[in-house]
Image (tube, rainbow, N blue to C red; front, side, top):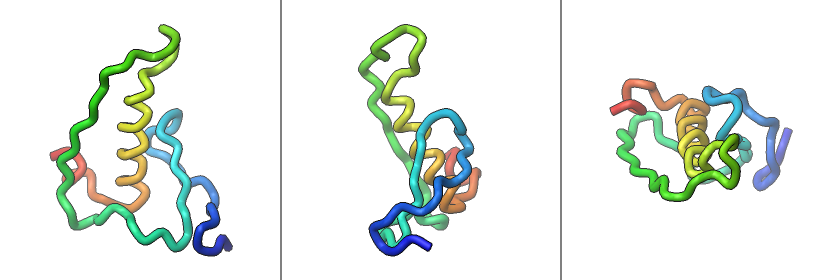
Length: 79
């Protein structure tokens, strides 16, 4: 088992190829399953190569993966 500040095993992701997250045991800030989230992401920079995804979209995927990992209901996530 990981102690506070150490990384635990990598969780299963709802967006599997992007937005990697690591569950850190003892993290004080986690998404609240009761909260309603309204988030704006700035997507202004293109990918370095045409066959790569835009880096900003990886951040969107990371946020979606975090919400899913911490059991924020989909009906709240999609408002």
